[in-house]
Length: 333
Image (spheres, rainbow, N blue to C red):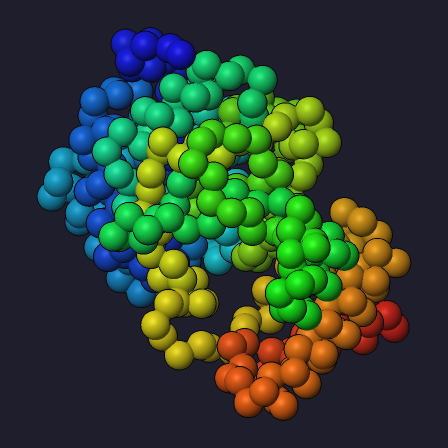
């Protein structure tokens, strides 16, 4: 393991935060970064405002000025809201062409609070493991309860299980379920959450930028898959702890809040992921298995008089956006 001095003297880390109408959360996140950024001394933070259309730019600029963060934090206003990958790519492109190009880039959600030493633990791990391309933090609730942060790639088996939600099937398919049990130790995994994901610069030089045809969701899964194909493994590093206020930045799936209708871009991203990476026939199989599993689950909860845990109109929206019903139209690939 490298020493703390070596971490401080290593090449720069650039952190990218994409904001869309979450200025207060973004500012709280910057407060949590301040001590560690100043301790490391080689970190720059770029906040991309994805054309929020509110007073986010003014709020963030004012916070940077009032807290004298200007030596390490800067705001980049975007002319359009092109989504998560688009916002991150604005800084990634800048990093790849900069004279002081960073060794690492950290994608960080605006709805995160960085625990003490979180950045240092990620840098320790990446510096000690030069063959690793991507690493993710342990995400947790404010009270320290761990969230699922290490995942397997989606497959037709994982999608069938997700739709069916039957205990015995989930047990039999436990090695294919996307969300792994929370590991206690650093381990290799298929993909990690884009809420806190550090990426070696060489990965972008090998793989390219993030796919901007994903507006939101599945873009980090896709990127980790492309990196894996190029020989860059992904690891989960639980020593790096980051509070994730789930759903606060996207407004989707917030705990304790009545579920909102799932946005169309979620279905579009899911469809794109399977068609792009596995082909149309595989995507058809995936949707068919999920749908048959889900209809079985719906019948089961109806007779058992259990509540429906899905967002409103989820089945209708799934069918409308499925590969199965779009075969005669322009399928998003």
